[in-house]
Image (cartoon, rainbow over all chains, first blue to last red; front, side):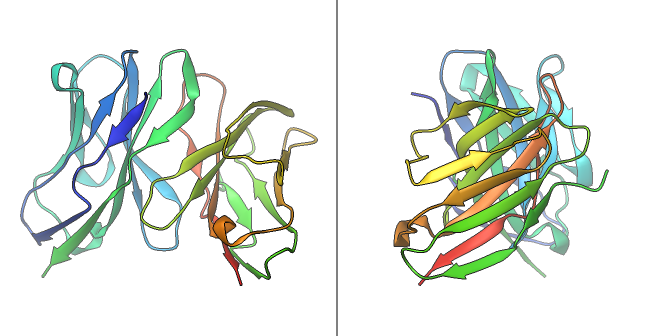
Length: 114
Length: 113
């Protein structure tokens, strides 16, 4: 079955600290990978995407993510978190040959301590 | 690029009533998607249009749900005989042709009394 797992429901980090949010997927086809961010009561904003090529991708707001095929992972990172990064983060996957259906993880809620 | 627009932002209705939501995609995007998001979960795919053709529907889309995109521009999602379990955020997204990311609206939050 196709699935996306975000093992951390909540994460709290101090402002200025580094951040890593985990995402794992399962299925055999070639994945297209995305990270979205959602503020309360809002829709989802695309942070970054991976289709092919360099496995380290840069996104907006200083975020980056690394695709590791051997680990079926696409973890999101930021070297120094800002208070405005507090939000919920969703990993999403689409599969080659069925790009139009995105599968989302259940999200990781990020709190930032001053 | 004015973004994906959804109306209304909030809808409160009594169980058993019908509701209709509207989505206006980004103007040059010919693909349009509907998702449902319940509290504490990620969005779940409901259905997808390419232009006016509805090409895929999830099993989540029961016969009480219907979506249309009559002229290949805006879309409506109707829920008939609403039930408590229909309470959720309904998100619309759009994308251009090809393997492109989906751009999301701010959603319509439905609350069933």
